Length: 421
Image 1 (cartoon, rainbow, N blue to C red):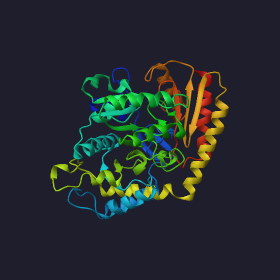
Image 2: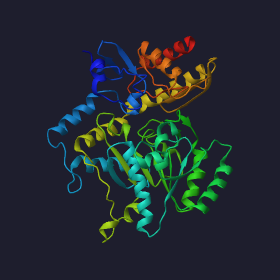
Image 3: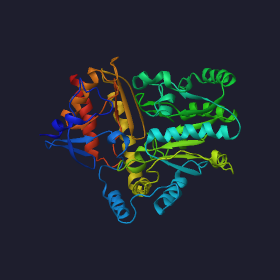
Image 4: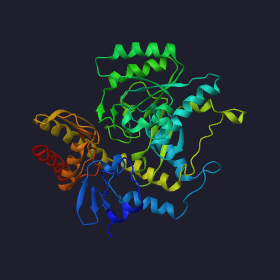
């Protein structure tokens, strides 16, 4: 039996309606930017396997570092112990994170990084003797699938069955250059009528919403409003972090820095799961007390797993290399050229790019998981390129190690598919 046939007997895949989409492609190998299926067909991974494998699959530099770590320390509980990979990772992260960040808390994945950030904000005020129970978030944001993360997310396609069980969230529009005063006026009313614990946002790019981009200049007054009102800000950089927007972090471009930052995905270059919630020293200090109940009683079994930490250290080392920085700039420049070219296509409404992220909106009102999306996905795969459209939005987020020929094939494939659908 094939992998595809065996898969259908017991497995339940995420983000999938098995009644209408029963088959899952069997992948047997991944190297660099290439995925190979069980029939020997190859596909360029144009979205870095959900924005994780930014240095390519099975990167030799990273796997060598991880293999070495596996020989000495595999797993140790982090509540009572520490170890060199975790300590070293905290030191290296603080060097590249926005300057106000000083504490590192380990989690399992992007959703739990957000969950920890939400709990930090709530308990920060609780420990100060203030009861705050409401968050502010952008419309159409996405922050994960655990209950706190679902609460602050705004895409009902994912959260519909659970909306009656979620936290109280006040939503505001994403700043677009024309609505700043409207947003600030709305915030004045929200703050006057609610006990706000924090504002969570995807800085510069809303990923699941269709790679929607907003400007740092427009976002900064919103963040400054919260700073002025002593409300914590939480930057969800799970998708944007580690070079994807052109800087180490999207928050680097914004004058007003977040109090809390959520990280995952490219943190370990897609090799193993891990996430981090970083925060300021001021937040950390509010959890210090002779009262044990004021401690942060949030824990994951695999917190600071040494193997994951070693993967993250190797990833950060690569990110800061001249070669990767040049590649990021090349991809960014290439995206800009292609967006200018494809913008005139009769089936395209808008194009945009930021760093290694490129998005194209098509002239259709197709749903996120409608037939158009399925047709596009099938057509792209048939031409040897893995692109996973979000409704009528085609986006690219390739590994930093992609070759010029592979990147050009992605562009050419998009043009060919748009000419035929």
